[in-house]
Image (cartoon, rainbow over all chains, first blue to last red):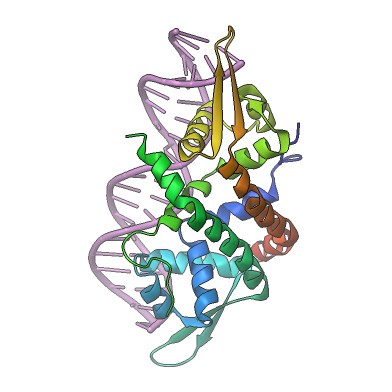
Length: 116
Length: 116
DNA sequence: CGGTATCCCTGCGGATACTG
DNA sequence: CAGTATCCGCAGGGATACCG
């Protein structure tokens, strides 16, 4: 019987659990689609995210090394975000997942509808 | 500026948010690796999931049409689970994501370590 | 502009006990 | 064996207000 947590904690689960939060993937593909973006640009593009969660999620992505944060010493301040190499390498996999979702969501949503 | 929620709610987000929960992907790849499995088999394979969450997650996957549930009228009861076609079609994308995680987790975990 | 700080609430998911 | 039912804690995340 094959399992996926060989012994102790599984680092794959750990890494993937981060991407499974509400905003990470969306921010990543947004940065990929638009290149370097300012904080306010991301916020305008994903307009239903709270300022707090945008900051928190970006910080996590930065910590993990998926996003690079660049602060310019100007007034008013300017902060730019872009994908790192490793962040960029993740994009195809997210896109493929999104592609699958796009292909199958109509069926899935229909399936859910029957529950009513 | 490209965004990913054209108007109103985005169904892609909706579908993906289900997979983003704690157990769905793990159950799917477990079923894929082992074929048809009984409830207790899945539980033994993923031994740190609670009985409740295994039931709940399996029901959701069944509702979405990713997993098929087959009950045998026996005593003691036997219930078998297997991937549906659509569930099976998702596997490669999960595997590719897991592969990426496996490739990059050492760097990511190291990056996180610096925060201490 | 790009954040922090604070408060608070929802709901995911764990623990435990019971059942057909 | 394969579930339900119930209770409950906690973390994710929203709203609001304030700051350099």
